[in-house]
Amino acid sequence: MSPVPADPTVLHPLPDQPRVVLLKPLVTSELIEVGEFTYYDDPDEPTAFETRNVLYHYGPEKLRIGRFCALGTGVRFIMNGANHRMDGPSTFPFPIMGGSWADHFDLITGLPGRGDTVVGHDVWFGHGAMVMPGVRIGHGAVIASGSVVVDDVPDYGIAGGNPARLIRRRHDDADVARLLAVAWWDWPLEHITEHVRAVMSGTPADLERLAPSS
Image (tube, rainbow, N blue to C red):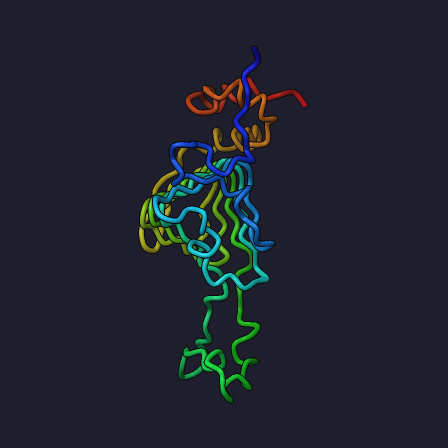
């Protein structure tokens, strides 16, 4: 009997653990893209991810998260809508308060942005990590609990702190190149299922050897 892949369309992959949700079948916003099997773990309101964990998201910048990412409780993405003017005496957004102040809405539109926030595949976010607007986090990266990510994180980098700094790489340059070339997250689910032990505990060389032929 052939191994059976998990189902990427199920909202709660662990029926007895409603705190864990797959984000792809949950997300409805056109400004958020999430790959298969990326999950969020929260004991309180995991299904409110779009409103509780993606903040100030008014567009047009998008949040793009790859496949097979793990998001711990309280991981938050701050989007460019949180920006305020800083080139005048006050940073207060008077126009949003209404009245005749609303006549000056041009003062808070078109503020500088850093573009889309992009998370690669197979990224692990620790509890309470925060990602600031326009950050790029590479494939296979690890973000330590409580970190505030203000700058890009390289592929297979481990970053931590406030502001987050690169602590080390999970693999050397040669193995990172192998893993990026193999791109196991793009394998057919049946092939991942057949070789899941190697994906979890093997070596980059093992994945090179097991990669499906093109």
